[in-house]
Structures are given as C-alpha cells and as structure tokens.
Image (cartoon, rainbow, N blue to C red; front, side):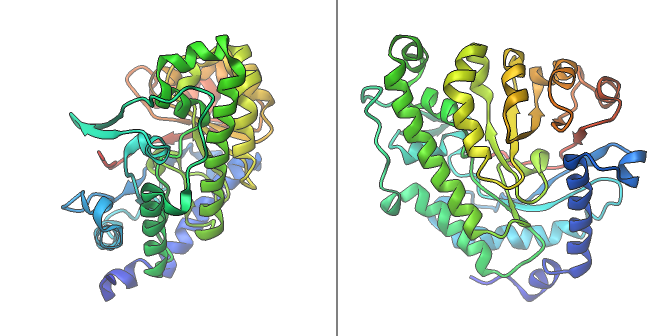
Length: 348
C-alpha cells in the first residue's frame, strides 16, 4: 500500500529535512560539549510529534504495512501544523507493539492487553535455562521487521522511525520471572547471569538489525517524543535498576548495558523513572553512557545526577509540578540539559 502523492511530497520536503538536520546538529553540539549560539541563548527543547494511532490499532498486529502507510498519511497532515523555530518537533513513526513486553513475547511469555496497558505472565521454566529464540521464525520479531521495511519502502526522507521497546536485560529478566529473578540474583547468581547474557545477546542482535537496516539519520529508540538524540545514539530502559543495590548493578548489569550502548557510534541513553541514585558512581564510569532521561521520581534527583556524573553526560527532563523547567535550569545552570515537552504521545 503506497501513500498518497501529497503525503509523499510533504514527507520528502527538503526544507523540513534541512530544519530537522539543523536541530540534530544543535543536539550533537550539546552531546559533544561544543558551544553553539542557540544553546548560549536558550535551553534545548524537544516537543515530539509521534503519529502512531490509525483508526484501527489492531492493524499494527495484523497488517503492519497498511498500519505504516496510515501513520505516514496522518503524519503528513500533522507536520504542516508543527513548524517551530523554538523547539525541535521531530516527525516520527513509532511501532509500539506489545508495549514494554515486546521482548517478553519474543521469549515466549504470554502477553495480554488489559485496562489500557500490556501485561505478561511469567515463564514457568527454571531460571538459568533460557534459550535464544529462533528469530527467523519468531512471529513478533517478524512483525517488527515488516513494519520497518514497510517504512523504508515508502521512500520518505523526513520522518524518523522509532523501534519497539527493546528495554534492557535487567528489565526483561524481571518481567520473565517476576520476584524470583530478584531472589536468584543473590541465591544463584550464575543461573541469572546465564539468562541475562542470553537476553542481552538477543537485544544486541535486534539493535544490530535496526542499525544495519534503517538509516542512522532516521533511526531513533523508543518514545522519541521525549528521548530523541543525535543520529547514531542508542537507548535502553533502566527502570528496574531501582530494585538492585549499587554493587549488584555495577557487577552484574552495567557491563551488559554498556555493551549494548556501545553498539552505537554515539553511545546512548538510559531511561530512569524511580530512585536510582545508588548507581551514580557506576553510571559515571560507563564509557558509552551519554545521557540520562529522567522521569517522575528520578527527575527529583536531577541535582545529584548533575553533580555526580561526568561533564560529557547529558540530562533529558520531563517537567512536572515537582521538577519544573525553572527548577531544572536552576539545578544545572541550563548546562547539559534537554527539556522534553511532549505535544502528543500515543497510548498504545
């Protein structure tokens, strides 16, 4: 299914692509610590427009090619209303199947939608016996590949394409086994290490496929409306790190996370949303960690992160009543800071 001629023209608009690339250059200057006239005057602000909600959301699971085409038609309408010289509003299609349980389903967990969000049932197999799935025949992964290839086949140069939630080894092992995974980290660390390495090997494979398939200037990780980085940067979800000690994260999980971010020439970002300050020392030493995206309770600890991390590590903040734009600027002096002010974000 090809998009309309008018949508094709809008989504290949050279001036809009140039404007996007100029915003990327500003972000790259921020990541590289270079002075930029824009950054000397204003805090970098991202307000993402992600159109990923066709009228029938089930198309994402039954016909990803048509789903992508409908997304692009909607996106063509939206970008004409979002030209902005103050904020970066990247046009993006995000394929969000199975929410944060996308990888769980690849590993064979039962995943279901209830009360507005995705859940999974834990595996019944023993920890330490996890096997790499047959990705070639994996229904969930093949759907994701079809969506990415359908996007590329439309030949549009302006929009970004955002992956499903690839998450992180720690998040996934806790999804797959529940609280048993946390206990086994202490009682049988070798068993949990086996499964973590299997999970991370799969994550590395999926990230590698996207990096080889989608042009770097168009590829972004999940939730691009508040996590868009310069081209060539990766991202992982660190939500569950709040449940483990500083020593455990340093020894068991940080090497896996840093290896994943190291796939990308620009390193990448970890998303945090709870109390994670016990990991500041480890995060400071992670070679490929370039940015932290702080949501909710994590944003309240911005001052601690700003003082504790390296000068070349950046902070993305979603403003809230407790952590306002003004307070974030006060904590950082406006340095190493990206304010994320989402205009529109999909629910599923």
